[in-house]
Length: 514
Image (cartoon, rainbow, N blue to C red):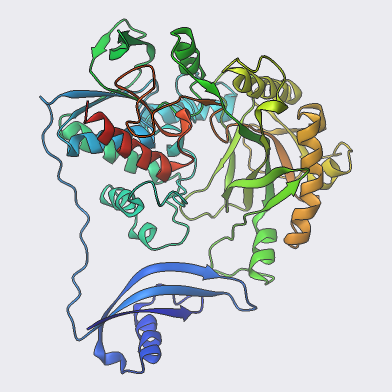
């Protein structure tokens, strides 16, 4: 017999099978000896009461054999199959490629950046010397921005596709099985590179191709139908279907589409700062205790406030994390955050941003690149304020709200360094004022949040794409170009690793019908 029940255990017992079996036996009013196995289906932390506990949905096997699930993948050989070109090797592109293989198509991924191993050198140059390679950075390269932006797998996109299938694919390529059960699954930036490389190897071993340092400069279109792509080295690759999965920072691709008179649209996005606290402040607020202890993970938060009819919200929260420089061009400051798998750094950071609508930005309302230009302008202002070498402008939280420059800045995780600046000199007034009103309100919601021990680092500007590449709802094809499938975060259809992966799968299925 198998029964599914919820059990509750204190921290420290969440991975102790013997302890969990005893708790389940008590809940079922049976002897622990009757339980042959226990399978955890879902696990979450409940910190709402005075005592923090783990809540688990479990299957209890009573006098019945439990056969653990195996996670292996065997893909068909598609070396000589019909090709599909995929532009971009981020989550959308990689999962589109895997789905193509399952459908008997040969994926050809063209990625402007480098493989993981070579990409690491360019990231070191960014952090140590302030040098940005526009083709290989935190956004461009094997795995895309997802490889070096934490590996958070939490998503609300459950209606778009099979989330569990995506998670199982990650497990089959090296991720821990914990991502299948945790309420907020997370891989960690230190583990993602080898998992991404394993996915790439599956694609190549099945007969697909992955081309690095392969920058697309033109789409080949004849009579409204896609025919292939042209690369910067002059090479032309031909196919009847192209999946455009370039990510939200490939500005030159948006420029290329506009130049080729392929319809794109300006899209709202959000902009603000990355806020970092000592992790212990967040732990004390969320766990209601002075010290977290070793049996609980670093805590996270999610904060939202409506200020003057506009949302101000935390975004991409990284417990035990690091703030990273994510510019893709020279003389820009863009910050993001990530955490290692253990989330064992002393700081917690989160993007804290204000929603920007089309009417907020001056300029020609018919210009599809208007929001992109605005984003770029703010990033350049931040670079100028920092003084160069990717030094970022920063301000203590209460100083920011009370409109005074910080005499000094707290220790923080941003490796290129921070400079004390009044952020109102960089942020547009209406963003600045909404942030100033939201932060004390966040402090009323979460004890200890509103403190001068927290630093605001500017600017968090790549929350999503400022451009949308339209597509038909049913066919997922561009309305002007048959065989072109705008895909993922860069085209405006995803907002994270899982949703991008699902969109890649859906686009591959659509491309198979060409």
